View 1 (cartoon, rainbow, N blue to C red):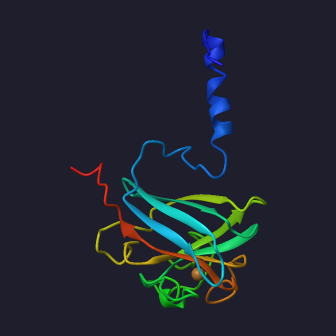
View 2: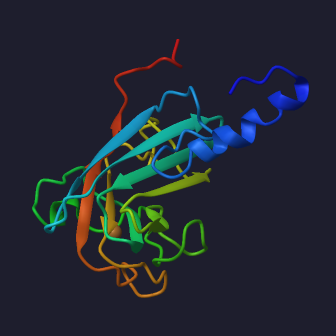
Length: 188
Ligand SMILES: [Cu+2]
């Protein structure tokens, strides 16, 4: 269908947003190149896959997480300390990224770890997306709040954002190292 009148054109936007539902998370970041990404691979027996893309806009850092082949339900998501997903249970990623030595909590809660991202909701079809923006992180700054050099981990269970030190979120079922993007389209 091709809109030929102004009123017809108004229909295009809602139709497009229907086409861009979970699994294709380009809704608000269309055309932007991530400055860093983590390619997520299944661990602890999971075959799920996914991508976490990180975008910088002034002081804001946005993470867009998308997974497929995951178990439906809520899953704790954290940035873990070490850039190493090599272990089959992702234990090589170490504990939560927590340079401030704070207590574990919800995303951006006070207190919380710098790596606390809350929970990812996975739908019945095994896909899930998550979009969060924060000013607590930087990217390729070399500072203590730099997300590069850590790993993004998805857990088998929901993060209760209360239990120390990791929200009782169970096995590590996906892991990916955060790496600066090769494509630097937004850099001079
Ligand atoms: Cu974790």
